[in-house]
Amino acid sequence: MKELQYDAAVIGAGAAGMAAALELEAQGFSCAIIEREDHLGGILMQCIHNGFGLHEFSEELTGPEFAERFIERVTSSKIAVYLDTTVTRFTSAGGNCVKELYCVSPSGAMRIQSRAVVLAMGCRERNRGNVRIPGSRPAGIYTAGLAQRLVNIEGYIPGREIVVIGSGDIGLIMARRMSWVGCKVKAVVEIMPYPAGLTRNIVQCLKDFDIPLYLSSQTTSIFGNDRVEGIEVSPMENGVIVPGKKFRIDCDTVLLSVGLVPENELSKSAGIELNGVTNGPVVDSELMTNMEGVFACGNVLHVHDLVDWVCEESRRAGSYAARWLKGERPALQIRAKAGPSVRYVNPARIAPERENHIYLRSMIVKSDAVLEVSLDNRVIRSKKERHVQPSEMITVNLGPKDFEKMEINSDSVLEFSIK
Image 1: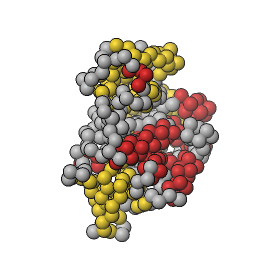
Image 2: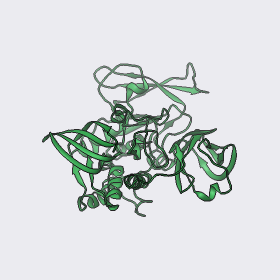
Image 3: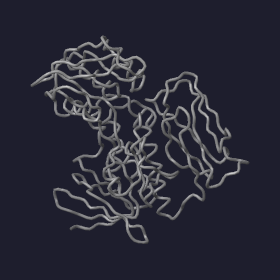
């Protein structure tokens, strides 16, 4: 078995992994990126639509163009890159917290030793089994991301008459993409009373192409034997199917856009504590998991709505990993939790002594909302939000000035709520 040693190892070569690795190298540490695919860039390489980079590069780019900016920096750096290489497991042992990553590749097995590990494996799509849509099992049912790869990378058109189940961003973008290649997109069907995707994608991908969006509508059956022939849609009121209002949409292809799940099988097998809401690791103010020296960032931590935020967070993860390698840790961290109308808060702890960048998601759709941050039931920050909805991330920064003249100890709790 080939054996290698680095200060840090990053698992995943998408935007998150590359951003974290570049930060580690910039701070003088040797670093390796391990990627199971045969290329750098991750899922961005099949996202040929524009809309990326407005925050990161102050210009609008396609997914491959965005990725190429980072790929050029990685390939011109001293970062070691291992493609076609899968981490099968990793362990942490010994007083110096050395991690051992066991990997397989076409050239054979290898073991990489490093003091720090950054988890950046991204996320995967939920499928029909996850949402339990009844009916037969014909050909013509795809996740939206798989259809995206077939059309954009492989050059195949999966069908001609399309229904998209779920209004996630990938599904909305694929509704537009399938229209561009000459298919008829019959509808997008969403079980919730509001869209799951960004507002801009509702406008640009559905309204601009006159594609119907059925909200509060459950897909209750898929018809067809050898090939999809149609779906049954059941409208809902107050979360309950309305008898007698169900209808059928004829189609030959179904694309599922029913959510994303952080890719954390490796994390779980290593003993990393996972958040039951996000399905990503529980991390502290420095994005470190419960395993000393193991950090998490990007969509493996929680699903982001913009890759720009992925890069921002991942640079911080690389910086925090570098701080940890130097032996630096915050003196005090306090717990952060989701309050009324907030689905989750990341990270799960914050350090009052320095600036903290916090992400959260609303559980409600509301205009003219107010985000309140309370320390031990006392409001320390109130922030107006023009509009909140579950599909769009909310960010808030907290620093030492927010905690001036406040009594804080290890039992203190920050609560985030939306009113």
